[in-house]
Length: 332
Length: 299
Image 1 (cartoon, helix red, strand yellow):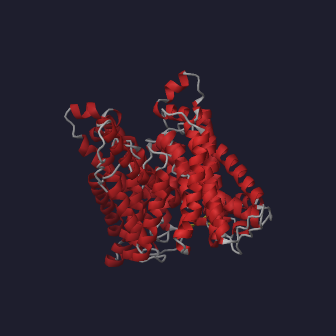
Image 2 (cartoon, helix red, strand yellow):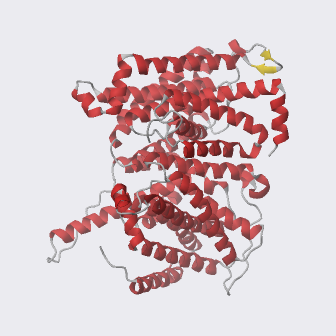
């Protein structure tokens, strides 16, 4: 167990942000900055899912609900209500928190697989609402006409550089907040509930309440991921709320490893790269992705980053004083 | 929301009959899928997340066999048996490898198969909507009850499903095989210690559950259009059915499926935008009142 030190972590976060901000100078291509922006959205989304799956042991299979909800609440409040960006962000957070509170209060009563399916069912409820409520959401065409992006505090999000910096900042700030959350007493309570809910109950923890709280926090950050993607594409599509988004998020966190905080980040980036690569080569994207997931699920279980971390721990535990090169055998 | 339309429908006998029969056949199809899902979960303790894809496979199998042979009987039988066999292979080759692991792994294996099967269907049968039309044997004038139409095929579908439901209930509660399956569900270790091959039981139950989904697909072909991904909505609905009825209970699946079928059918008149929402509302109420479902024991 390590103690969280806000000052040091804030320093690291700032350093990371500066590096991210400078990266376009090294890779000036548009496809690179586009990739970073998309990856930021999915990384926040996947990490928020891992708060539930990895830390609280709640396997949500409907986390795409919040991705879609975030994208639509943000886009709609910008487009139909004409709010400023900070106000739309605040509204998105409030809406996601409220929906997460209601859905969470219903779902967390259920164990394991029931929980997974019920969350999924609620996601499909949102999806069918988006499809049916054409007057507001534009139905299966998605929101047309783009999202207005008025400047605020001197930040002009219609400028690609500003948008890039905004996405990176949101990513770093969100990850920083979630990192501190999992290092906080609340984070340890989550782990305890995951490992032994009954014992946690005996110790006076209201398991039900903590689980709903975790669900709300994850829902809010998932919504922030959705907000970024809607800013990036300047619209919102029903696909953001489709169940495959949840499936991909689960695969992202498994790919990176659920036992490591930054696993989902790595998984999100890897899956996006894979995505771009496969769609370039073949039109049968699902077929290829399906086979990859199958091989992964039957073969490599801990996730890539989890595997590396484990190999590193084994190495440091086996030979602490000796300075040898770690040789994590790659099984991928 | 259109409460007037709903009231108008409820006060006219013909509309009630038409909506009820429509609701009944969706409910019956849903029952076949949900019963398989529930049976597999009750025995193997895994949720077959790709159960909807098996329904889709059944529909496409029946579609192809009917086009080749012209016999609807053969088509339905072929769909049921073909999907049953597919389920058995899937269980033996893939699903059995993730028993006892994380739920996540089971989800991922099934998820990968949904993706693979959806794309395979697109490659083999094309991405556009397809429909088979009513088989010749059922192309006769519908029966008119109180001014409402009742197509002959609907009666056939309802009849077949009731027979299957009864047979399933009898096999599980009255026969030796049913006893073995129930024993394996409660205590697999003890069951195998008594000399029963639980691997065989698992494979058999998975095959039976898949067969039911395939049968539902075959029966649905004349009244539904076929498209890749058609299995997903029925998967969600059948899950809701099992939550309402209680996981692992065949009777619960039947009641839950009929309720959902009727709620959808009448809901589509009164709340066209919110038909799905109505189903969820219904499920939420049941969950709050009785978290284990109407016929479930303990969650």
